[in-house]
Length: 415
Image (tube, rainbow, N blue to C red; front, side, top):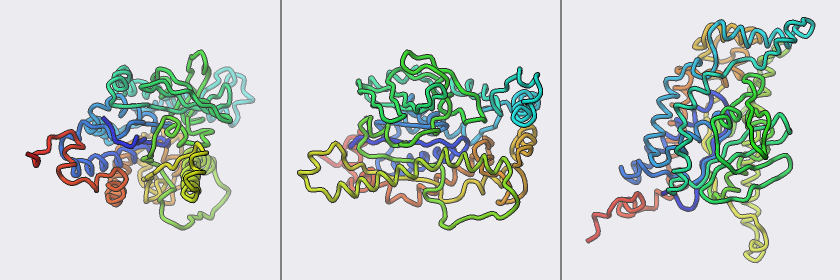
């Protein structure tokens, strides 16, 4: 039902930047269809799917309809290419005033005003609309069936516990898998809910924390990218032998430093820098760690390899070839007026690719002009690496008859 060796899809976090992932998947479907033929449309190439933050939402949507992989990729793509911020957070003036305006006042002068202290605003934006979208986009009731019928081996999403300070991987699998525990990292097997997805995608300060009630992992949770020191670890623990990793920045960006010399950095610039540290750095570091381990293992004799639990993991990383901050700067005008005014209050503004605070905006720009450009970039970047994709999945080595067999199609060339 899925590729062998067992292949994991790893989708990182990044708010609206996750539109790029959908473009990559669209191109992957197109490449595979050309290689394997039309029957591949129902075949899920990923036995393990792991996601963080907005990547967790994409991951769960794919996992819950793993029996119709090509169709669900297109369904998710239609959502992203027609996105509006109102589908994720309250973007009307009243909603922004109730959350963002109160929150900004609280962190600036509200501590001296008793009524603001009583109000205790929870976040910059109210993500209640996202809960409604999740119930339409992610039919979690189908996940047990996908696991039972072998369309999928495991789904994992990550979240960070404000209550314990630990990083959690919540997973469901076709067979019992012993939960793992590392320093400040805990794994919990059990049914996944929409609350897990809301928690995983709750960008710190921007969206409110989500409560998860569980016997072994209860408490308040936020974005899974926080304290995620080893983003590739869940896929490896769940048995993956190779990893198809889709990032949302930095790994493949144009070389060279971008230095903006100006006055003292405003709140939006500092927040954007912090967001990049949360969402982008850990994945790049973990990919480098994986490569180092693979190189080390390649130097060991067979006798030494037999004495270590480590094993080489093949990985292919697809990530943006352009700086998404610069793309976001071109689309700031697409944000709803009230949200644009709110972000202007923390320093987001200006014109062109050097607009101030565009890094922060790049995570919140759930608007079609921006998400469509990211999707197009994802498709182009993947097509540009078509040969690598074919080699990674082994699709380039199949003769026409073997390709039909791999896709479950009868070989018409045989007698």
